[in-house]
Length: 422
Ligand code: PMP
Image 1 (cartoon, helix red, strand yellow):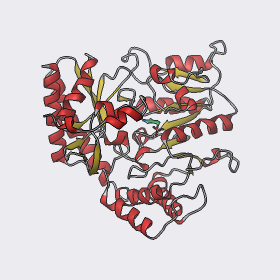
Image 2: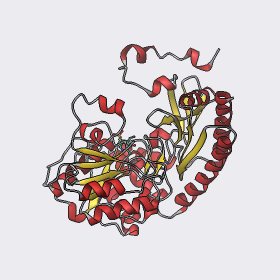
Image 3: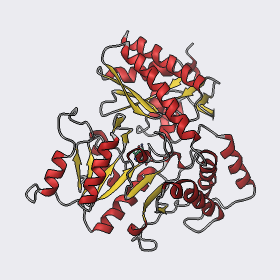
Image 4: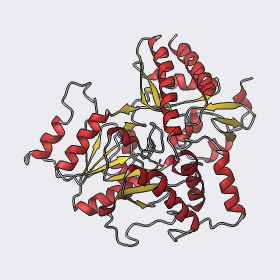
């Protein structure tokens, strides 16, 4: 009997909305997790190269953060406090300042929008519009910024956009890096329509960009492309928003994914791994001079998740007091890429892409990616697809995954690709 046959999924099928998705691709019921491994209720173990879609950069139930949280809870530390000042928030802000902002020379103010990535993006878009007095925003082909209306308007995926049920307006997509396979000069079209009073493009408030498009298929922008974009924005007085919800917190190596390009965005969104533990927390960071919010002009009940502040501070103090994690992420990323290149070289129509520990295999036969993920699941490995046609197998493992665990997971990937492509 297959391990999953004795799993009871009936209440999910009977009662949970059809909108559920991951539980379809991974038809089991997970119960416990530690480090890079999840365990289902039958005791079967899964190696996790999905990492909560970027939430678990430091692994599941990281023991250091767990202890800090247990201590806080057992001394009745305040759990909920809207945006009141709390000791947990003070300590978190101090760590953001001393471990992240000051060493990088970044004079950002910190806004706690709502608890998820899309809340950080909404706040960023609202602030950009408020500061500039302009309405439209430039986004990029295959971008993903979230599911609420403002974020969805700057998201590319047509299926997701269709869910809005109303026109999504005030956003204009431009080609992301290498959209034309290097045929067209990088900002030819964008700068032309910006400068042509007959182009029909309203002067935008902001440009929103991911340095590596995670959901859009692991499309990696070159540092020189990002620099070109930052220059174009600065020259024309357009605000640059980097959405680092998925690629931030060390995923590509440095804490912020834009550091590789040496640019300073006007606004940055961070979420997913910022709490370190899987607790909801999001930040919108912006240059001090942009802080034109009036008190309470943007609010929300769950802006201050004190438990997330406690684990988030533990994460910053444990992993960002030096550059060890960054160096290890780059080393492991190269190792993973080397092995993926070998897998790709052994088959026609498979290519690799990525940066740091966001890596991927792209399949010319688009249906193959989903089949590879299914074959990997059968072998105890969690892998997700990405891209407009789910044609890419994306690796988003915890950064704390060991070399042995990588070897084990990559062996499973190689077998799974062999099984699907023959
Ligand atoms: N921006 C980016 C770049 C993302 O990858 C995501 C989530 N995948 C979001 C925003 C939205 O975050 P959330 O799902 O937490 O709202």
